[in-house]
Length: 419
Picture 1 (cartoon, rainbow, N blue to C red):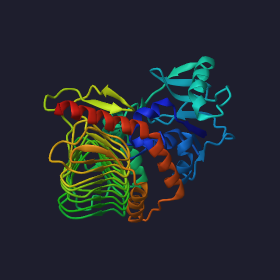
Picture 2 (cartoon, rainbow, N blue to C red; picture 1 turned 180 degrees about the vertical axis):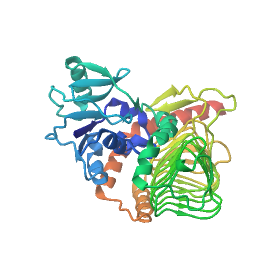
Picture 3 (tube, one colour; picture 1 turned 90 degrees about the vertical axis):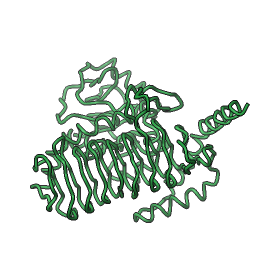
Picture 4 (cartoon, helix red, strand yellow; picture 1 turned 60 degrees about the vertical axis):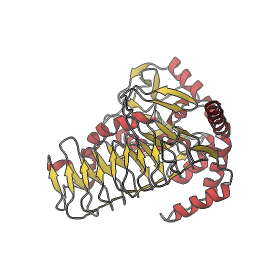
């Protein structure tokens, strides 16, 4: 199968995580959406159609993919936001729909779009010319969908992960529940006095991971390659991506990759991006005091999630200071710096902003911002390249209007209160 992956207009509602990566790179379960799509569909050749600003960065991060290549002609196109089930597709030309959203298109007979802006028109044309079928699986419409589906997706991933890493090897871990639900890669290092609770789902520990003594791992959960669990309480529904350092308590959250939560503090029902550092005693609230549904600001609009458990969504390269307090339903963009103020921080912090004494301000010195990013990435043996620099300059300009509007609105509210 030649597989093509496209981004549609729905990616705008996956910020701040999708601001800096294609939607197919989001994590859910023990892998990214891309890895799951490729595995489930049995695709050998894969290409992608992403936002033009992301193309060079996507080529750098996914060298095996054909990115925005007009000559690429797959026989199946799938939505980058589709979380597919463990089932193969048919071969007859059709459009697979979940509700009103296109999950996939098989053997399209209509011409492909010349530009990404034409994708939605192309999808509408496919819907008008091809028969419709009900698609299985789920669309990731918002980040809370990925967090909500994470636990059940980990349960689906268990058998695949077990086949990948062979027979169970618990290394003396104290297991509460079915022992076969604990799968540990051969070269993972597990210290004494670690407990795995598999009564509610599998505990999956990937290659090169380190789990220190006195850690408690509650399934379903996943620990990515070369990540370190530092005497932490990892609650059910959590996925830790590769090369992270996790301490304290984490519940029902996704930490994308290369991020630190080294010290004590609570992270719940959240999605944390890449190259993020949560300072010691950083706390996230994931439940309102009145137990009401949480509203979240996404793409400039406040949306009701219909959920009572919503934590924080934190973009790439963002840092928090010691003792920072994140409010329920916080959305923090990329390259932010949050300094504690002794009270809850603002729930909306646009990209390239800092919070100091509770006030949101724009970060103008991008040279210093990128110097810090270079240092952080070098510590993980990664390079901050020209494609990174070019893309982040573009992102700074793209997010300028919303950033300045948010700051202005906050200042107007402050002046009204002072009067």
